[in-house]
Image (cartoon, rainbow, N blue to C red; front, side, top):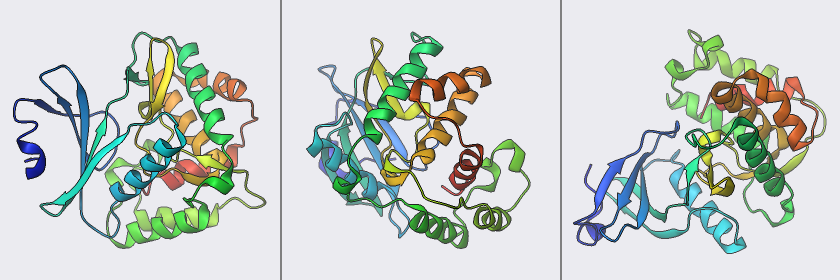
Amino acid sequence: MRIPSKWREPFRQASIERQSIGESGADVFRIRLHDGKELFLKSEPLGSLSELPDEIARLRWLNRLGLPAPSVLDTTTEANRHWLLMTALPGRDLASATDLSPPQVIGIIATALRALHRLPIAECPFDHRLEPRIAAAKDRVSAGLVDETDFDENRLGRTATDLFKELLSSRPQGPHDLVVAHGDACLPNFMADAGQFTGFVDCGRLGISDRFQDLALAARSIERNLGPDWVAPFFREYGVVPDERRLAFYCLLDEFF
């Protein structure tokens, strides 16, 4: 894939390597400059359901607040694609950080989520409550953008339309515990260096949502990467009693994105 024309000359001597970690639908490239500095380039096709413009807006908001996340260096649109150029965060993501023990990983993600969830929701301009998220899920089903081959193992073989009916019927009742949520709180989206949290990545779904939006995906990611025995310690470290119905619902909702 050719990078946008405005960056070809500045990066002519750079090493550009495609990244494979995570499940984002976007293309992500690591750029290593001749002076050793690293940047990241992210690209996604134009379209009404593209998420990269959302990520750009959220990163700029996090940057203004001084919260740990990549800094937006430049953006452009070329070849029917959105492009984002951003800084690299120090360290490695929590799914790849082989120098960290499971208790360290649990401590880092729990502490990072608690800090994010303490932000005043009145200051967050991004609404990811259930109404718009369910509407977005429906739009993705209608557009044929839900990858049915990537469903969790217990849902393989089912259709997106079938799962959407289950989503509507299992929607949590009662008040929601609203926080500023990351929206995709899996281990690959948290960075750490020398045992310290260095920032959030893949922030395109950040916004006001139920606390269990993040806790569900974090717990699922911990189970997959560290093993099921580390899920309970995560909830203890974070400081909440798991709500199994909400955990199941938000994992189901994630199948559509």
